[in-house]
Image (cartoon, rainbow, N blue to C red; front, top):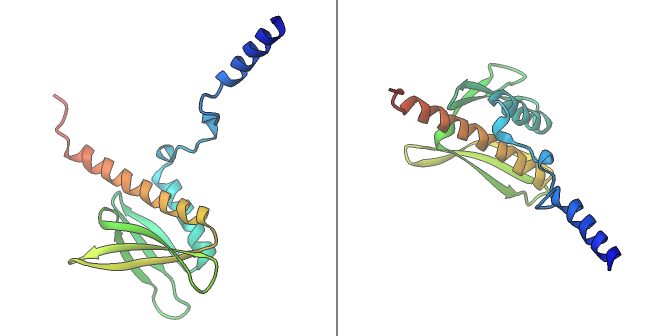
Length: 150
C-alpha cells in the first residue's frame, strides 16, 4: 500500500511540470521576433529557391520584392501586407509545394511571388513568417489610429 502511494506521488510530481506534456520553452514565439528576423527567414527560403530574389522592408506595411537579372536592370515589386494572401499548393511535376503570395489590385487577384519548397514544414514556416509581418503591420496601424492617452 505504501509503495503504491509513493509511486502515485512520484507520478504526480513528474507530470506536474508540464501539464500539456510539451515544454513551454520549446515553443517558438513568433511575436517576439523582430520584423528584420522574419524578413531574414523569408529571404533564406528565397535564396534556396532562386537566389535572384530578395524581400526588403519599405515600411511597416509594405515589402519590396527585388528581382535581379544577369543582364539589364532588375525588377522591383511592392507587396502591400494589408491586401496580400499566402496560398500553398502542390506542384504536379514533383513532390514539392508552391507558396504563392497574391494581392488584389482593382478587384483582380494577381500572383506577386511564387516559391517552390520541398516540404510542408518549409511552406508553413514561410507562410507563418509572412503572416507575422502582416500582424505587425496591423498592430502598427492600430497604434497609429488610437487616440493619444489623456
